[in-house]
Picture 1 (cartoon, one colour):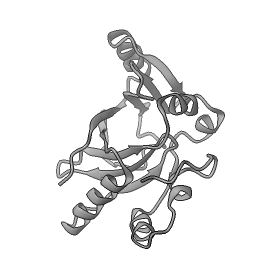
Picture 2: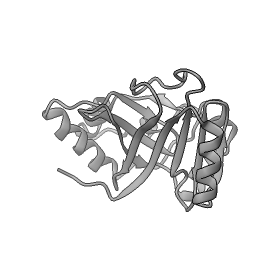
Picture 3: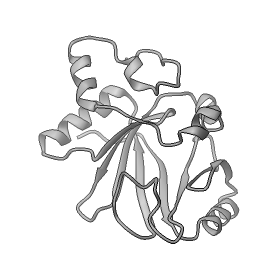
Amino acid sequence: MGSPNKFAHIVYKTHQFQEMIAWYAEVFDAQIQHQDDHLAFLTYDDEHHRFAFLNLGDGESPTDTSLQRPGAGVHHVAYTWDSLDELLNQYQLLKNKGVLPQMNLRHGPTLSMYYVDPDGNGLEFQIDLLSVDAANAFMRSDAFASNNIGEPFDPQELVELRAAGKPVAAKLVRTDQSPVDEPA
């Protein structure tokens, strides 16, 4: 089984949206990358985001479509793999054990698969698609502001295209992004 090369970020579901943002910004000296009424993304280093906050308001958030655990708490923890091949290999290994992602998204800066553990905790397995500077710029773009979740993709399609030796670069990015270089 492959291991990720780094921890990426954590997402909290909260009824105390502004207080959580302020606390993490203060404690970690973090800057806000993007914030709207439903989501906020903060970072304290060169990663495009280390924390995200999903605003539950006084009920479940309309943007909380991936993991259906109610209430405040951790939404998911994210792990990054070094390459598309490693990520797809991990997908295939888990699929062979009957473990499938609940959701797959082309976020823009990342290509991500979301799994749920037996207790209902979310795990995001991802690869970075952009350089640090490009990812930070994309997080601040109008395209991200108008769609801060991303678009779905089919990991099995990527597996099949790769196995057939066909290009996949155009399948990795959102429809509002320029294609990335074909991954090795």
